[in-house]
Structures are given as C-alpha cells and as structure tokens.
Image 1 (cartoon, rainbow, N blue to C red):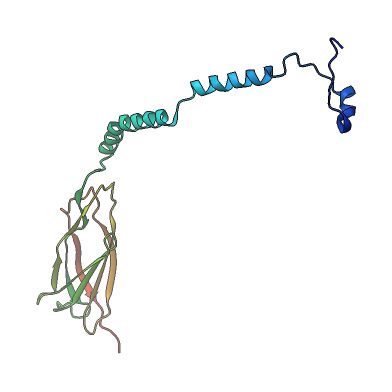
Image 2 (image 1 turned 180 degrees about the horizontal axis):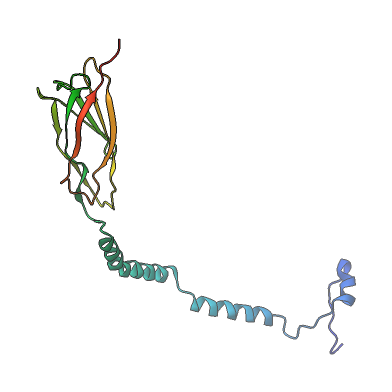
Length: 188
C-alpha cells in the first residue's frame, strides 16, 4: 500500500479510514518541530530575575525625573513644617451699645489637623490666637484648609464663621483679621 495512507484503528473508528485518510511519513516529526520551537522560545524569553533587574534599573533611573517634576511644581517631597492656620485677631463688641465684651470665648477649629484652640477676650474685647503649624513627613502640595471660628459670650447669640488658611504656599504673614465682631443680645 505504498502512497496510500490509512488509519490502523479498528472498531468504532472504522468509518474514519475512508473519510479522513492522511499520511505521516515520520510519526514524530511534528512533535520534534514543536519541541524545537519551544526551546527557541525559551532561549529568547528573559527569565524572571532578568525582568526584575530591568524593572529595578528603570525605577532607579526615574528617580531624578520624579524629583525634578516635584520641585518644579513647588511640592516639597521631604519632611517640612507647614502652616495650617495663620494668627487670628479681632475685637468682640455688643451690637446695641457698641461696648467691648470682656471674657468672651473665642474658639478656633482647624479641620486639617483636627485641632481646637481657645482664648478669651481682654477688658477691651480684643483677642488674638497664635499661628499653628505642623510637621508633615513626605508631604505633597497641601492646599489651604477650612478654619472655623466661634465667638460666644454670656447673654449673647454666638457668632460663627469659616475662613481658609495655611497650606504649603502660605507663610503666615497675613493674619485672619476678624475685625469687630458684633454680638446680638439673646432674647429671653
């Protein structure tokens, strides 16, 4: 049966002999080509250790570019002290008489650091709060954050306002000047 291929399997596959005849001159030739292709692929594929070395080199090479980008934008990528609230000052007076209110309570709450500072007014109704700064480690660009002021006195309706302060680009040279705070007498 030279030149004619046949399937030697008998039984259930007997009908395949007629429909799907094929010739394999070398039975293991296809497997040999597959193994050769696989060996060639393995030789040209980098090993995991080579991939990690390459990634490490790329990461180290990128460090100067990242530092340059951060310094150009003004972000400080090192530990630094940043102002979170500027100094505050003002005077508390009665709305009807325009007389200063002594011993009124002034509270400042800084959202960025969740810190509350308290003070009271003197005999002239004046108050002042110092600036507040905090150390930030590996900080990025911190923007101004909300600062809440609440003024209250006995027999008067409390006053509350929100301002923004602090951030990496603010040095605290301009205080929060609340001016004259007029408190309305509480109705009974």
